[in-house]
Structure formats: C-alpha cells, structure tokens
Length: 386
Length: 92
Image (cartoon, rainbow over all chains, first blue to last red; front, side, top):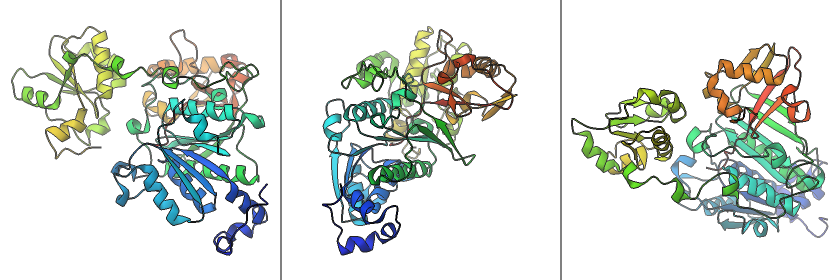
C-alpha cells in the first residue's frame, strides 16, 4: 500500500521517534504520509486533532469550517492565536499547521457541511473526523461516512464530560444512529456556547480522536470500534461502555431505509428561521427598553439566564431572575397584567421564554432583541460581553 | 442499593448530584424512583407517553439496556446504572 511513498532524509530526522518504534517504523510512517484525514470543524476538538495529525506526518489533512477566529475561542482552540483573531479558522489553522510541518498538504474548505456537498467533500479521504458542535451536522457526518463506507472518528464534549468512539459499520462496528437513533429536540440539550466547556476538555477528547486516526491509518493497535469512551474531568475517570450495532438501524442495519442524505435540520426538529421569529409586537430593542426604564410605569424586567451568568453582567433594574428551564415552575408568580421584558445573553433563550409565556396567556411580554450582548453594544459599552 | 450516575448535562435537574443511591428491583423502577426525588429530571428522561426518550441511553454496568431487558432489566445490589445522553459540543 505505502510502497510508492518515500521519506526524505529531512522527514526521517523529523519522525525519528516514530521510526524507532517497531509498531510504526518506516512502513507506518509511509502509511501516515499517504493517509488522508478530513477534519469537520476546526474548533475545540479540531485544534488538538489538527496539531497532532500534522505533527505526526499525516500527509493530507482537509479542514472544513466556515467560522472566523473569535477571542472567546482561544481559551481552548489552541491551533489559533491572538494574531489570527478575525481570520477564517481554516486559514488560521493552515498557517499554524504549515509552520508545524511543511512536509504535509493541507486542503481547506470554507464551507458548512451540507447534504449537497458532504459526499464530495469526504470522498477523497480515508478517515472522517467529527469535531462539530451540533446534532444536524453530527447525523449528516455519520450518514455520509456510512454511505461512503469510511470510518468516522467521533468526539463530543459538554462542560466537564466527553465521549469518543470510532463508528465503522463497514468493519462491523455500529454507527452514531445505533447509539442515538434520534436527536434531542432543539433547546433541550444546551450547546457549549450556552453551557460552557472546560478549556482543556477538548484537548483530552481531541487527542483521543487523533490517536484513533493514527491507528486507523497505520493499521496498528485495537481501534475504538464498538466501545464508547467516556471521560469525566472533574472526577478524573475514564469509563468504557459497549456499543452494539443495531440490526434495525435505518442506515447501517440489515434493511436500510436511508440510502441518501436527507434534510438534517428537519430531522433534528429545527424550523426555518421565519417560523421561530416572534411577531414584532413581542420584540423590543435595547434602545427602546433603555428609554422605558426611566419611567415610573416601566416594564417588569425578567432575566432568564443562569445565576452565574448574572454574576458576569446584569442589566440595571432587573426585577427577577428565573432560568428559562425553570420558568414553567414559576410562571404563576408573574403578573400577566403588567408589561414585561424578558432577556438573556443573545436573545435566543428569551425568545423561547416569550413563546412559553405567550402560550400561557401572557400578552404584554416582549423579548429584548440581541440580549445582553446588544445592550453592551448599543447602551452600555462598559458591560462585559461573554 | 443500586447506584445511578447522573451526567453533567442533567445535574442541574438533580440538585447538582452526580450519583444517587436507590433501592429498586428493575431499571424502570430505579428511574421512576429517581424522578420522584428529582421531578425536573422527568421530562428529560421520559416522553409524554411516559416512555424512555430515544436520545437518552441507559447502561447497567457497561451494557445498554436496549440489549438487556430494557426497563424491565433486573438489578442486583451494587449494580451501577448510567444515564448517557446525547451531547453535541466540539467546535464552537
């Protein structure tokens, strides 16, 4: 397989700590050089993945991302740096990886993975690596990898916990749909942007993924197929659960019903934006609210964030804090006769809260558009954004 | 007594508890006992029909209850039951 690939003297010097181990050796290093890995996402998981795969000498690395580097990424996305804030993540990562290892090829795709482009993006690669951050893209990545018969090296993180495994139905293992046949409804499971993440956590999980990519490409060791590795950073515990292939799985089972890529937003219950948008009478801008707060008959101001977020920044005059997932329990304590403005960090959770309140019969309730972030932009620049 | 571990994502509904010990004969009884203690966990574990949600996996030891007897899976004392919900974070 790797016969036609050779290593230069420079490469031999660089990879000598691999070459002197019989499990890797020249043959393994040639296989790495010939190997092709596609990283979906160049963020928390993608950062350590890209760095270690480049350092190890994986010859062809593809990076897919459409984001730009933000200051708040740098707490964990170690492939990027202060000097690349504002730059597309794929460009920022490519720059760092080329400095780390000029002997490898890096292809970048500034795009969101969609049902239209996923198969074409993945087809040239040997291994697909899932470092995304949302359910639709995870199901899409899974399905495309299954349809192409490629291994999908999976990692996922939340706050202090992570999961990793290798989905590889072609080699008899299960796929993501065998593990989770259905996604949770939108809003039930918070994302890292809402829930936070310990910065070093993706380092641990992404490094496990990188290890599995290297094992798959070189063909050494026992791959993490059919086993779900769980990591709890607070307890500092690793656990392993058995993953079985579901014979009735709709994509990798005995009689698959999914034979092409589908609409993953619809599958995950995500409605087009216009359906989620509140009618304008249920919205208020920070400037409009600021003008009202000076009056004696000002609206009741409800914060639906968590208390630890209120510790970071709070709009002056806030009357009450009820986290959005607790709202249903405390709604009866709110006065539906009084004008009310609901806010959160960005305006998404508070829009959900306004919808819940509307459903419970509240009519004089408005969502603060853009939340604390826009309040900081429009009204009080001294308020920290988080 | 069986021990049930609560994942980070659900601890806000279990008063921050990461492990709860309960006396129960089956996995189903254990989960319902847990929800009795922490009612807010209910809608995250069970759907409107009272069935375990499809994106919540429950393991006894290292085995998925889907490949045992489901909620009827009998528990021995000292069994560890784990709730493993789908999480998606990784990029942003």
